[in-house]
Image 1 (tube, rainbow, N blue to C red):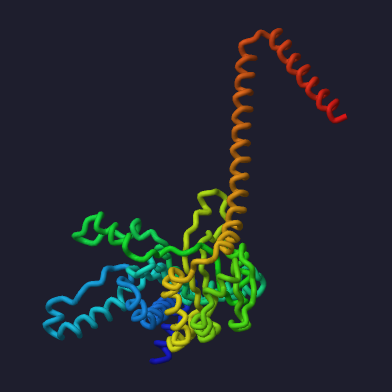
Image 2 (image 1 turned 30 degrees about the vertical axis):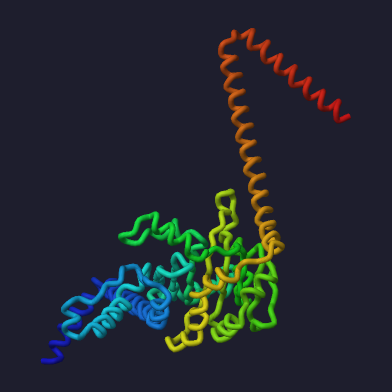
Length: 401
């Protein structure tokens, strides 16, 4: 009986496979792809959250607001059930999990911090592997082996702080209940947050060439090793005096502790891309830090000192980044050279546009004149033009001779 049932089932299974063979192959592949995508996305979220868990306390200590949502206090029910301290702590833990990071894509996470002296705001970006797309991930790695211009993707954290640089009155609104006049007077009495503009960087030598090729601001610096720094790093600076002022023992020790996680620390007031217009060269000061992410959350301990130093660099700039007139004159000379080149290019472009406009008007006037003439008058007009052109040519040849 069993053999009879089997003999009946086998033909049915064979017929189903023949009729839906392709579907039977595609469906498992789709299921695998969906599972891999979910695993990769969740893994990236877990890595990003681990970074925020390791740095949230430090960020909250330095900034009044971290994340993209206003901090909310505990509710009445939460205070009554667990007390004010525990409710506040629980609320902060909830914010850390839900609101301090924003998922821009499955491989990119961002955060934001503001509310600090000398800093308008700071942006953070985490770039992770394409774990949700293993084929694309492996493809990038293979391509990087054959093309030097396409380096392999690495997981990194990039942070950019934008100092106030004396623009508090333009960026910070007046306190609630206070008039603008009161706010302006208060800011006049507060210490100045301005400092000299320059380009200075400490970079890992593995990325030095790429940074110089990709960034206009670093292309105007001079590269030089420093005895205090590890052999795998170098300094890109516009002046040795700037290096002596900024390369403190604390920074050197923090870079050494970060080790292979360190990629670059850049202080700049120049644009990333080479300016093509005068308005593109307006100084915009910023401080940038890039760190590779470790393979486990415990690895953040080695780079925390450098991250904390980065958060406080604007204070150091305000207090010590004021250089001798000779240094600032040299820095300004480099910028003036670029400005002069752009001015000459713009003047030549405008002169070409004016000449094209004159040629167009002359052509339209000539065509209008010819339309109003008879055939004989047109013939004479063209002959006069030809004779005039020949005389100009002969005159030029005579002057050359």
